[in-house]
Image (cartoon, rainbow, N blue to C red; front, side, top):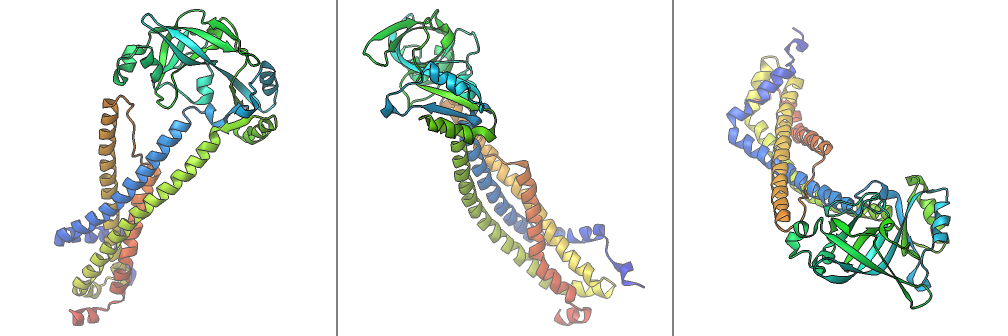
Length: 409
C-alpha cells in the first residue's frame, strides 16, 4: 500500500493533538497561561501606547480643518498688528481656502451680581473649526447667534460658578454683557464699545494656564476692532501647507502650524509605543521559551508512542505535522487567552479611570485602545511562535525510526 494512503488528514491531526489536554492537562494549561500572560503583556503595553497617542493627537486635532490651518501673527518685537489690508492680502493668496481673524482686548464683563475685567477674543464662528479648540462643556456658538464661550476662570471671577465641579450647572446659559476697550496702536487713547445685547454663555473651556477670557462673535459688537492680534489661515489642501507657510513667513509673520505639532507628537508616541512593545516582547520571549521546553519534554515522554504510530504506517510527515499541530494549537490558544487577558485588564482600567474623571469633573476617556488589526496580528504571531517552538521536537520525532524508539524506551 502506498504511504500516501496512511497520511493523516487535518481533522485527524487536530483530534490527536488535542489529546494532550486530556493526558497532561496541568502542563498544557500552565504552558498556555504562560503564553497568554506574555501576549497579554504585549497587548496591554501596546494598547497603552496607542491610547496615549490617540489622546495626545485628539487634543491637538479635534477638527479636520485644524490640521491644515496655521496661526499667523507678527513677532512681538515688531509691535505690529494685523490690519484689514493684511487680511485682504492673505485672503487673495491662491493657496488660502479660508481665514479667521482674532482680536484681543481688555473688557469689562457684567452680570446681575458683579463686574470683572477679563480678556475678550473677538472671533468669527469658524474660529472653533479652524483652531480645533472646542468647549469642554456646552457647545460652540453658530453664525448669527448671540452667545459667548468663556473660560472656567471667567466663570469663577464673575461669581457665576461656586466651585470647579459645579461650573457647568452654575454658568451655562447665563448671560453676560461686555464693555470692550480698544487700545490705539499709536497713542495711549482708549475707545470704548460694547456688545449689542447680552450674550448667553453657550460653552466653557477648561484652561487653568490662561487668564480669564471670553470668546465673543464679531457681529454682535457695535464697533469693528481697529486691528487684530493674530489670524488663522486654512490652506486649500495638505499639499499647499508648506508653500503657504513659506509665503507667510516671507511677509514677516510668525507661523504655528498644528500639523507640525501632530507630526512631532506622532514621532514621540511611536518611540514610546516601541519601547513599551520591547518590554512586552521580552515577556513573550520568556513564554515562548516555556512553550519550547514543554514541547521538548513532550517529545521525550512520547518516544515510545512515536515508535508505535510509525510502526502502524504513519509517515515521517504525519509525525512531524502532529507535533507542529500541537504546538500551533497551544500557540493559538495562548494568543486568544492573551487577547482576552490584556483587553480585560485594559477595559477595567478604562472603566475606573473614566469613573475617576467624572468624579473630578472631567470627561470620560479611554487610556487603553487596541486596534482590531493588532488583535489579528498578535493571534497570528502567537500561532507562528507555537509552530517555531514545536519545530525542533517535530523534526526530531520525524527522524526517529520505530526500532530506535523502542530501544530508547
